[in-house]
Amino acid sequence: MSLLTGFEPIVRQAEPLAQHTWFRLGGPAEYFAEPRNIDELQALVRRCAEEGIQIRLLGGGSNVLVRDEGVPGMVVALTESAFGAIKAAGRVITAASGAKLGHLISVAVREGLAGLEPLVGIPGTVGGALHGNAGSRGGDIGQWTCHATVMTRSGEIQQRERDDLTFAYRESSLDELVILEGKFELEQEDPEELTKRMQKHWIVKKANQPLGHQSAGCIFKNPRGMSAGMLIDQAGLKGSRVGGAEVSDLHANFIVADASATSQDVLRLIDLVRSRVAERLGVELETEIEIW
Ligand code: EPU
Image (cartoon, rainbow, N blue to C red; front, side, top):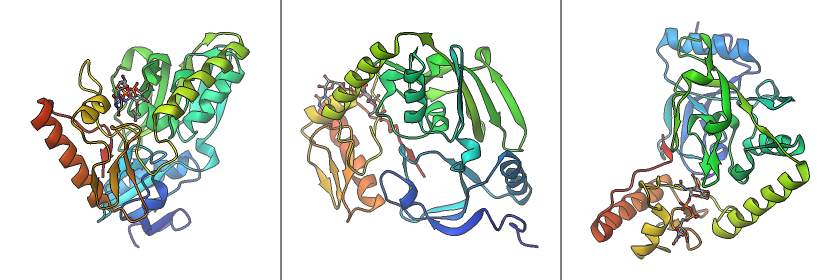
């Protein structure tokens, strides 16, 4: 019996991860699985625990840079419809973690439920957004989260109530292997007003960020009270290039990649930006994206 006997319909080997990320860069996953339901996910998580195979969860791939050499072990993506449901009841919306954050926001706005609309334009899944407490200047997902269902590394399903959850700037206490579902308690408002507000947020974001490019959103966290983008800009680094990776001219905290780029180009550009900003402005930047 091989490690993966019984999982053949859902596991592929040497799956190129570039096609699953917004950067479109990086090497293969040793194993890549798209389970069709929670039972299959649970069985896979248990098998990997027994066999000592490392597991990572990939959300929408919009905040991750995969190294060129790829990643060992199992990468799991919750792309199947069983992980995409969104339901509204009163002021609470329940969203499965594989649903797109943009879909959750549009359901909320349609239902006249306010709170998440400042997050419009943030790519990725609900699970990824919860894991990293995605947000913008107008707020973050954590402040509206009242419940989460998670699966631990041993395959146990657990509930997290509001009092068990803590969220900070791009951080959440949801660090179990899998986030399965989130519940969001929102505020009632006129859907037309909400739509207008969402559109305003969207226009501002589109004007200020290179959203149509290969990137992973903001590369660095904002240091307390400062903007990483402004610092990188002030250090004169817009347009700096390593191979096919370039610091965006539109927003300096974005690195955009062209078709010739490798992950190594992006990593070298990240190092260059960090060292120049430290040298010229005395500030140490910390990456916001996950590097696999
Ligand atoms: N700025 C510059 N040059 C630049 C970029 C920005 O001078 O190249 C200045 C702007 O003019 C503004 C200030 O820096 O005065 C702040 O810029 P912005 O409003 O774009 O916000 P930010 O702090 O750079 C944060 C989040 C974004 C989020 C925006 C809008 C982080 C690291 N970034 O950016 O999130 O979209 O606010 O709400 O927290 C992400 O997390 O991936 C991300 C893009």
